View 1 (cartoon, rainbow, N blue to C red):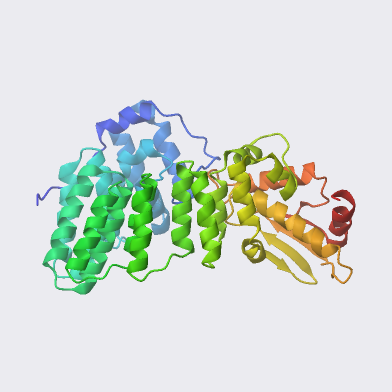
View 2: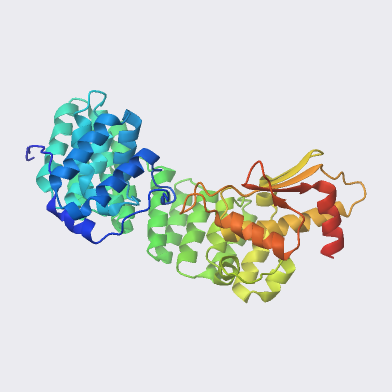
Length: 458
């Protein structure tokens, strides 16, 4: 392994990237769903780097990095670095400064050496052609952890997973070689299990499910029993590639290994079918889930309804949409209508999302994509009408629909679900309004909603 020297330099390629990017507006912070949230201080730092792009002066960038690290608390500096290292970095034009920023952070008195950061940094360096620097970082970690096998395997696991998420082919191949060698030479069952687990998941992430299945076979030959984790990953790996016969074969293999199909595996299968518009295959699987008493989840709704183009056109469009389950089924094509019928025949997801007592009836739409929130709202309205028509029904004092404020949306603060529910309320002339105390909720008096449902939606 090559030992290199770490130097604080700004790659010339960074300036080329910077010339072609638009300057961001400081108040608007966009972050990918599931990515590393960015603090305001880090955002200002990135803005200052971008705003000096015309200067074309690496020394200026070095000065800004040094000033930022010196003036920022540990959490702020590490937040900025973690954001740049994330595969969902919303400032990809600044990814080339990750290495000099890491170098400067590593010199800070408060910094505690962290091999996970190195594992996240290496694939970026490989992508940028900085192979000497990446090898030097790996060598440093190996030197420090060579007598701590568990820590070393964890580093290699983090490294191969990071390389696969960044789609760094050279970095992945190198990391796979390191990890494979350690697993083969180790007598520790813990090391073997952790290594195999990451090898399987990362191969699938790189679009190589067949190779991942071969690793599973090697596990068995070497006396390591595959877990549900590895089998699920191979199943989903085939599914994401559209290899449905292999995916279905893995289902049988899981059953042979003693792992029954569950909600998580079913959602992977449904998502795979949906990604290739194989809607007719989804209906029998939903029916199989019911026959095996496998419960639906919010993710089941998301997987199925995200795959329905007509439903998606309703919830994303600016026009009107059906305001009852029966009306929706009547306007959908056969495949989508059958899927909706299978979902609504099971009320488990609605029951879990709804709380009903004398004081409040609450519907919580957290975790639901727009299509799921739409269908659950239609089911909820139907359920309320059914209950309110019974004379013995106690009407809750308040009715609340929780939409959230968009913290986990692609653009922070803009909630597609809230926008959809507001449009539904307007079209149905609902008395529910946005709560002034909590803008992520719609509220109304229970008796008012009951009267509206009985009188307006008959």
